Image (cartoon, rainbow over all chains, first blue to last red; front, side, top):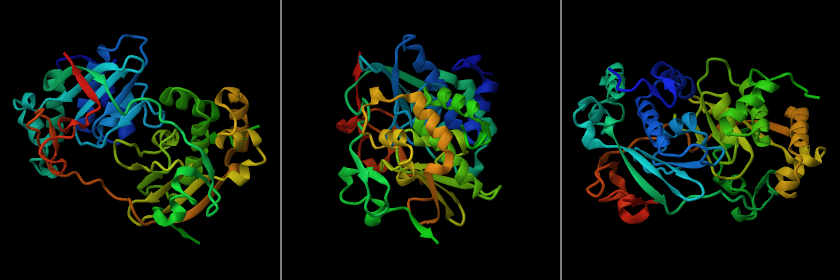
Length: 193
Length: 193
């Protein structure tokens, strides 16, 4: 039984549909992410331009990309690869914002959520439908919330100077040295002729 | 005058619309990105599951997220923060794929594209409509293409063991030490009471 009818301005069916289309499947973490973004956005005054932090690279960045204007490519979303299930939205100007996180103490009354999140059960033995039902039923009740002031890592990514690599003829940042990283042997590919 | 009517299965108007809705504005780099993904996907056999690399964190990741099944959150897109305007799509199983990049030599006949990309003109003096027209008119003619075999950085991101941080009560990876990074003083926020 869901405890709220809409999440991020969408019906639950629509939420699941949008998640599946973008992310490839109805990832439970992204459904929790929808509830997190929904709650965080309530605390941002309408009209305020906000940026986002996400504290894990698994799944959760897609919730912010789907349900806020912040994307990885536009730079308004910053991802910290910390493997913590938390996100913050904050006013770009004042740096005041809110952090929402999965509160494990609160998940203890939903053992399937707790065991799934803590990786205590093998993936194959997880009943994904039951897990999704628990997550939707739990809604915000498994989350916590705090007002925060952002102190670092914020702001625009500055683009440096670029020049043309004498090795490959492509542009690269001068700070990388006399050739681009790929021509220095750090590339991820070899050419197939 | 565009030299191709559809890009990634969409009309040009639809392409620009989708870019603006997700990314916030019609970023020229994302339009080039659309042509890059379009070309790369032609070389991937239908039905093949592919992953992606993007060699810059600026704009281009959003082209892959919008026009392929690969997103940052689902892990099928990997972003290298190299500030090179290139992407690769490759078969997850064989690691064979294609790399497409902005070929600066080929942009020389479009000085507004060259000067914009090489950051030779101040942002404010760029005529964005004219730049978009040039990019759409140029299409694939400013890109190059190579077959590649992926040699590193590929594959699934392995999730490690997580435990509960004695400082904040949130889950974090055991490899970070006896407390999570935020409790170790490396957080990006301070709490507002």
